[in-house]
Image (cartoon, rainbow, N blue to C red; front, side, top):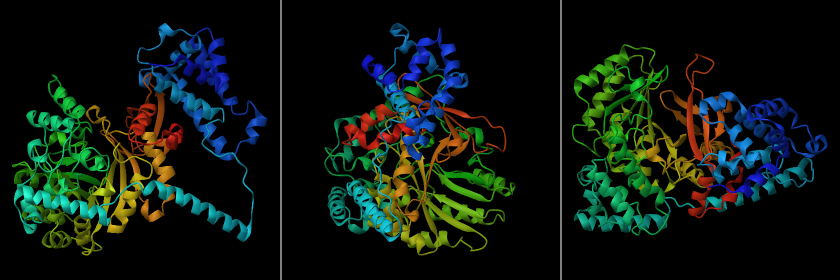
Length: 594
């Protein structure tokens, strides 16, 4: 629902808009008049404009560009929704003509953008600064930076790391409780073979190790009854809190325990006549089985189609029959055909071996894949994408690390490990040791995190990046969670990821913020969110969801098709954060990221 009082407030913050809408005989005329006059809005009150800082003027221009885009006919066509008509009916109080799903989320977003156009965003402190020079300026600057760091640290200290002594001791208690349940020894628990044999696959076993909420138990049971993949290694269960009444282990639990909305969504779609769960359209970029190629120089190679546990939000989990499923290894015929294809395409110089999780394969199969790729002269880099250091660090044995490192040949071929830590709570002594086994052998390790509701609070990913560097992992990408309806539970608005990259990551030293915020466009590949020219905000739907047009990486190279994407409502997202104990005021600048 929407509030008429909020509509009045929305128009009052920027009167020129309402004036144009009321004077026009119809909404099409209002559109043309706004587009014709809007260029003059910034200078309409020259005296006021001159009092604004350069950053405030820049913000006004950004808001004006976004609002002008909302008024274009092309945006209305691509989005299938014309904001101008809604604004026109609002101004004329044609309440009966407004969309039935119109909500305060729409009004709030428009209100903030209009506030920005009016120079009233309230993002910056308008107090004049005393100007200093020389050493006096340097001392003042240093004091200011100290105060800024104190503020940042107050946020960052809210988030724990798995290397902290108190957390380590809690996990040791969990470990001992799990060992008692299974009747295993320390040596067995530290043996990855034992871990794989004892993957927890049902709620009955899991609730004997940790408390489950009724929703968690029901979701697991329904997922298993519907033959959805589910499983957690005993090691990863030891990272849970025993009790289920807190939020401290939310980033860990949520990755592997599916929410009911996900389970019901997948099962409902399965029952539809035409069901295509290939959200990323990998089938459209697969020239041969096991291979995906979106970019000129690199291919994705998927020899193994399962993992030691499943991340619920994974883009490929719909392909996986079950956790650590038998028969997941591709046949030798398919493997050889894919490898022969790579050899026959010398433009391909890098291979990302992923899956599934390739490090869950046997040593013999890993050796076969790496040895076959290493024989191809035109392959200069082999990337191994794996969550094993996080979910099953015991698998990274000295023998495995030695074997993988043996294929690195400086000046000829590089072997790279790309892993997937989501939260600082996953950085544990065993995980650190797994990473160090690679690093001691000269292999570089990178991390790809997914930005979800469980790790998106202020400075939360900063804490992850800080600890990643401490254990020898370089932050690489922060992905926006995939826009699949089934995973709405995890999704975060694009504006929040842009805000994080600009306002939080930027406050860390360069070595701890080297990753890139990206949106993975289905069928097209990565879109770098730092670059505004790579995407366009088209409109805001009545329910507050923003609609974007994403441009492919081929922009300025070839005329590839763009992709229209419907995001989340910022207003609704801030309400979710409030339920998690956050203060929405801390995120108020989110409305000004387009």
